Image 1 (cartoon, rainbow, N blue to C red):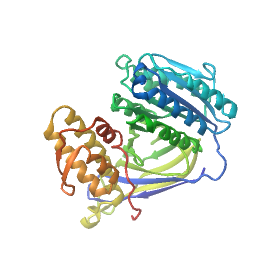
Image 2: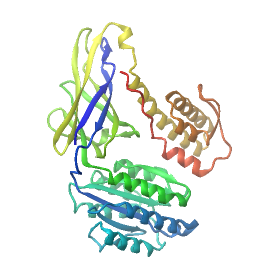
Image 3: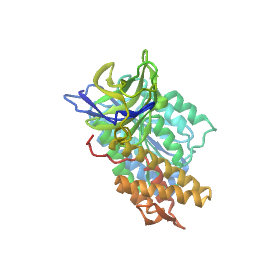
Image 4: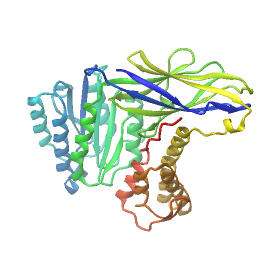
Length: 419
C-alpha cells in the first residue's frame, strides 16, 4: 500500500542545543484489494452485573449489529466474558468464515447469552489471543465490552497484556458507569486500540456498528515506523499525536544498528501524525546534521521516508521560532495529561490542584480549537474565562460526564499544514 511521510519542524537550534522535535505526518492511500486476511473477535461481558438496566439485552443487539457488518470471507468468533472466557461461536478453539449462513448462526448464538458470574478481562483477552494466533499475518481486531471493574488478582491483567501486546488490536467500550477508565485505557494502550464510554446501553448498537465497519476498512495489517539515528544521537520519544495521543516509546524493538521499530497497528486510507523527539550531540554555530530518518515499513518493505534535521545558528530569531505543528501537538499531549491529573485530584478531594489542572485544560482546549474537549470540560467545571483558564469546580458532576471527559481526553484535533 503506498504511503507518504512528511516532516514539519524548526530545524534551527541555538549554539549548544541538543533537543530536536518534529511532527511526521504519515498518509496511506490503498491502491488495490486488501492485501491481508482479516480476523475479528467480539467479546461481550456476561457477568452478573450486565443484567442491570437492560445492559445484556443491549449488548446482544450490539453484537448482532456488529456481526452483520463482518464481510464475507473474514474469520470471526464470539466470546462470552464472565469469570472465565467461553467461546460461544463457532466451536471452541476454532474460527468461522463469514458468510450469510455463519452470520445467522452467530446471531442465534448471541441470542442465548445470559448474565452471570464475574469480570475477568485477562482471561477474555487470553482466549482471543489464542484465536488470533491461528491467523498470523491477518489484520486482527477485537471489540471488548464490559460494565464493571476487573475481578482478577492484582497483576494478572498486566501480565496478560505483557504476553499478548502487539498480537492484535482491541477497541474497548465501557457501558454504564461502574467500570474503571484506567483499566480499559491500559488494555487499549497495550493493544493499540481505543477506549470510550457508552453511558446509555441504547447507544451500544451504533457504536459496535461503527467499530466493526472501521475494522472492515483496514487494508494493512502491521505498519511500523522505523527511526534511525546517527552516532551520538538517540530517540527520546515517539508518540502518536493525531487522531489520539498514544506513547509508542516503550514499544520499540531494535532493528539493526542505530534503528528501532515502533508499531502503529493496522491501517485504512488515512493520515496520522507522530511527534518524534531526538537528543543530539551539542553543535556549534554553522554545524548541520541529519538528526533522524523516519521510515514507514509494512511487511519488511520501506514505503516512505522523511528526514529530521538539525542546524545550529546564532540567529535567535531562527532558533527560538516554534514550529506550529510541534507547538500544537505538544499542547494537545499536555491537554490529555492535565485532564487526567485534574480528575484524579478531584477524586482525591484536592480541589485546589483539580481547579488548577482543569483550568489549564480549558485554556489549552480553547487555544487549540479542540471544541469537543472544551464541551466535555464544561460539564465538569464552570468556565469563567476560557482564555485564561479561570474555572470553578462544579459541586455536582454526573459520573458519566466525568468518565466521558477522562476517556476522550486523548482525542486531538489536527493543525493546519503550513510549515
